[in-house]
Length: 363
Image (cartoon, rainbow, N blue to C red; front, top):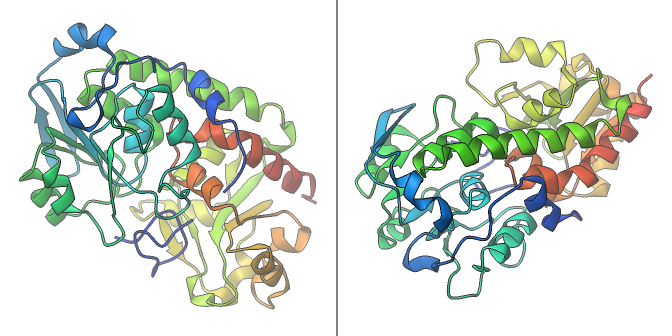
């Protein structure tokens, strides 16, 4: 399974996507209960004040793309794979015993600003005794390191697990896999699913409502965004065969739609009945990618200029009009593409002004 975070069909799982932001505001916006006691990697941290009622919710059975998984007791040793799942656990006040490194879009600790802020609030910052163990996913699911952590649940509600991955992980611990489309789980569904698996359904419901309210309030500050059509694509003048765009299954279009924008007809048509998160598009037909605004991650500012001047890519209507959001900030791209109740509030202060500038250029 290729990565949903960056570009096209040949992107590998960790060949992905820095910025400013208000990491501490993330926690407040999400109205989290991050005063939980911390236990570190010896066991997952959970909110002690709700442990009694949470335990009464078990066993719980969760349906997913590979069948269903029963979690018999409230998990004490939580491990996460892929992106998003660790963010959600932390937002719900649970510090996993193990999490994957952010090897694309992450900082020198293999983490993100929003994750670091949450861990700090929970008394489990990386480098401390209570921090989760980090493992690499550069070559796919790290079965060996996950097994060493002896988890009692593996969270993968947002993931691209294959059937083989699922079976191998299930030999280690119960796996809460993605519900349907690989890398297609919305952050809201990921939050609901993980909330159920951790015995924190009520907290998850409140977290979703609070995060959606924050996004809505911040987006309303830029009314020019509402109603604009968009294509969230990928362009690289050095490799025109990687040209394409993200379908409605991907969290980027889902986020833009949630703030009142409209998926352009060309992307909507490609999304119908599809379980793909990304489709390739012939660069020779770039002029048919019609939308008010075109977005793409780029390696750097020079690449953005190269896209504009490329004889094919420069024919994308929105790029010709100057309504081009070319994002070279990898952490910001990560925050939107692997959106979570922690990453979205962090990203809004930077991402929305960029979008508004593009909207102002629409002709």
